[in-house]
Image 1 (tube, rainbow, N blue to C red):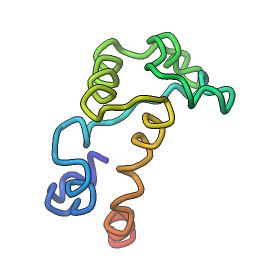
Image 2 (image 1 turned 90 degrees about the horizontal axis):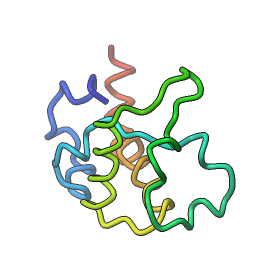
Image 3 (image 1 turned 90 degrees about the vertical axis):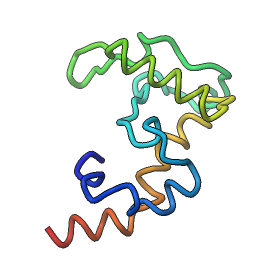
Image 4 (image 1 turned 180 degrees about the horizontal axis):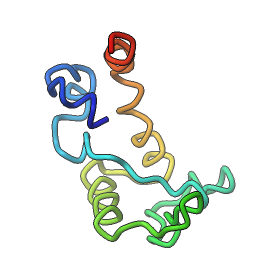
Length: 107
């Protein structure tokens, strides 16, 4: 995402139209991959604890600042379930994909 942002926020028409241009929108998100073990997790109504975001691939815990940003994201966008958080996590990647594709194809 940081590479794409170098072209300017004005290129993210769909993202800024639907989510605004707050830093939370364009900051790298965090996701509790290992925690999401069943469909029922999507129905949970609060962000899981920081331990749930442990990165098993790299064998490292989530930084406190990253978890705090996840909490701010949850609050800022009025999320009520982990399904909301999941969908939000994927949204910036998909909403401006044509522009993203253009950058990668032309470089």
